[in-house]
View (cartoon, rainbow, N blue to C red):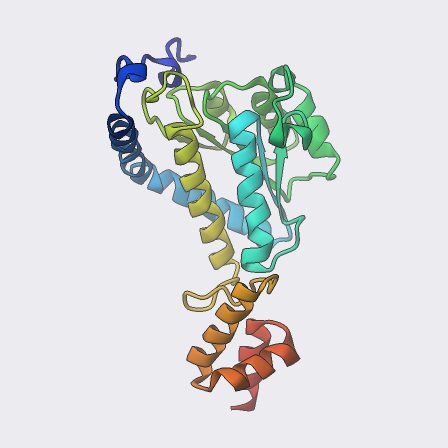
Length: 273
């Protein structure tokens, strides 16, 4: 059964926003935002099952795909694009796809989300297979682009998850692992870039970080595989090596220069012990 009155479209709990002071606006938005982590907490058992299934696929060489439109698509691309520098994985290990293509990252592409066939066409460019895993992201729970992609994935025996912000949405009915983060009416009626977007971003943070940790991309609590793409990260890497090996920063810098990343330094020193 489809939700006839989706929570994302319900009237805001606040009236006359245009008459509020700046402090009242900020306080009210913050009050709504504080509800989000509690809602996610209730979904942790379902998120746990989703993560375990993703890890199984990726241990066999599979990839993780995010598909979405508008804000949801951009959030997926953001999470996917942050994994290579954070965890040192290739850019084709976690892939974000947005309705309307890369143009839609910055500018809305008219009617892109209404095409039920395009998501599968986009996924097919990556020669997707049953080794892979797809998460469909749609605050409304009913976005045709996402729904069509998940349905085709099911036909091709590809495991799926969904992240939506309404109850009984269509994508939740199709996905193997539906996550419904029902955050309620937005402060600004219908503006799902607010609480819904925050909920989706927090959930993806949890999912991708947990997956990477279980795939061995973290040592202790450190990002030992991070890409050293700027001075700040080089300094962080030197600090990690200094603390882990109990050596001076000058020696740590020399080792980093020689072995190129933190994991390689720690592995080399471990062998020599």
